[in-house]
Image (cartoon, rainbow, N blue to C red):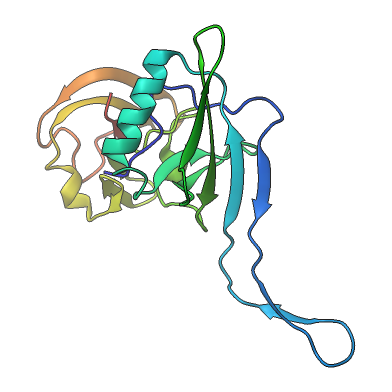
Length: 209
């Protein structure tokens, strides 16, 4: 499963304080005369952002560190997070260096955390199925109308979704009006998210609570 920003930790940067932009993607050569010559060194668009987060409580900071150490293997793995300016979901990773993040404590007992993160190129296939204002990557995607199926962040055949069982937050989209039904902490047994569309259903997306 692709890690995502922990649900118990605020994911919002301090207002107007995120700074960054695209990483230089040109190679430059200085001729004997005249201005430098440039060419594209890569077609991929990476971005680098330095982000001071809104203050964490001590409990939130402990949850952040546990997530960083365990889910991200101390920063070695990428994670799903929303762009600090555009809000678009994507894959990020902490920039390597002397410290992956900086910590300071305020007089009121809150913890200030800041870090520099790299936004990876492209849009993950599961991005359209992430809930608004959330970072959770879907456990299961069964988009019957769009013929898109996946489990644990990996595109699969339709048959794979029918084997999934567990307790999930399930969002079912009806046809033709697109009304979404929410079932939180629903116990799902194998086959309840079928490989073929049930009557009147265009999409089923499930998340780990």
